Length: 492
Image 1 (cartoon, helix red, strand yellow):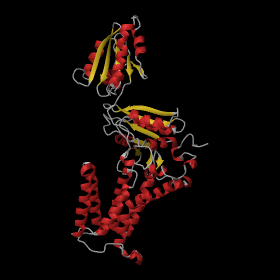
Image 2 (cartoon, one colour):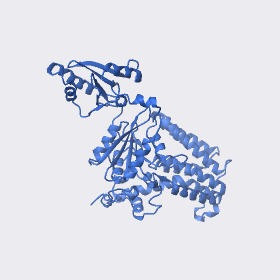
Image 3 (tube, one colour):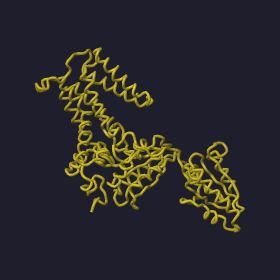
Image 4 (spheres, one colour):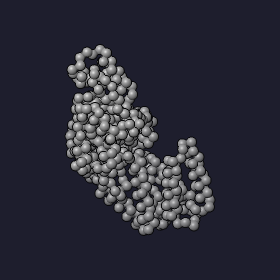
């Protein structure tokens, strides 16, 4: 920022209402842009001005405040202490004062209203925000059979309220940081003061403060790329959730949440690979059923990653199979190599996934029928694919959809294609090399100084057992050590 720009930012509020109005005309375009206005009227013989942004404010609150202020003209005779009388008449729970025009602009463009008083070098800021948005509803990607049906929305104030409703601890902190030279996006850091690691909170604040960009139109995803500095690594380093109960549970464990305005999902930091394979449904059932669901999900994730390349290794060397499993493998020949069929099937399924996202809901069923019946069946009949390729590709895709984290499912798909190519090149040796390279790669990853494969590597037996078997709530007496909580005990 140049010296001229800094001076412009730090312009103080003028005691003359006309000067403030002229500045606002130059900066926010009052009189040009229709949604920003300055309403002027008399209060006990003194000129006051109300700055507002249409669409971000609750008109009912504003009208109620103006009624209270204007009625004062009829009942108040004292005229020598206008500012104190006005402040007393602003019947709202959040009223503060600002001294610079930069604070005025930042507040007004966030949906707050500003009241200037002629002869005063301070202005009142009143929070009457009412952002356009939707009501909390159950998120599509994290549905449960039993449990809460509310979910995060695009309103940061409502999202923090959903968390506060579940954690009524006075030590819960919601700290706001504005990021973006032009967008001024609100980012909230949520944590429990005496639980979360202070170093982690400091690192996150520092990284967010160091973000230098004009705007964060992609909201939390743009923040993630600045925060964890991820490049070619496809594996997610933060976990997203749209469920307030999941977010609240992680806060109690010692995690730090990052809530970005205009985004219906919340970032959980730090996270490991195993945070992405857990689902709220496991904790909405009793421990035995939860463990069963967890293992079924683990098997689905395993199949989504290793089933196709593992089968391909046996296709190249059928002698590795016992006689009892001799039926495994293509039972008829086609004009295309098997590994090329697998790649084409994977690409075709990605086409289908993308098409289903962009297809209107009313036509999505028709799209599925066309893809499954016409394309799949005809491809087998004309000899393009063998039935086994379609079968194992379908199982692999179902395993991808069983993965709780959408980002992890996509990352596993890339890793699967990499292992398939190595298997096609070096056969069973290529499969072993591919799996080994994948494990070494995951071991090398760290998310905010947190080992990605903890508690498997570095090994922690008690923590790993809680991942393999869904523990009872009463047995979860300690917080995970990986987040370095200040208070390690959850139960006395």
